[in-house]
Image (tube, rainbow, N blue to C red; front, side, top):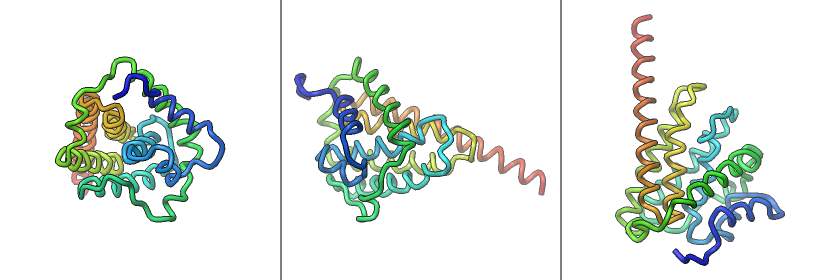
Length: 201
């Protein structure tokens, strides 16, 4: 990574403050080849917040699962239906989630440095990242309502995407660990609920 390059947090904040609608399609023009990671980062940010979102995160998670599938088959450029490209990110993302992500990115940029960036760009690793992103996103989507457990898998996806953007494999691994822990908690809670239901029956 070029040491003179503008920090990604500044780029993202500049895009957020710029005039015009904040749509998924608009990301491609601004972020180019980084659009995959940026889109996943922004779409999963609302779910990573411990705030009620009124179910809007399930729509965003469905888009992320599609993007993850595209990564698995090796795509490097984002494809989305035209209707989704025109979809605004919405007030939850632009007024709460993205500012939160910008602050988080700035903290990460203080200690993050390019580590294993070339490894992250290899085709096999890219496809594996797609599998991980898709799996953690599905885990967040099936978390019991109002449990708050979707936050950890979603945060894991956010950190994996951020690791890709900052060329930092350590950050991506931290995201994977957080996501796996969150998924394990969801499975454990789901099993406990199932046992209770069987007891009632």
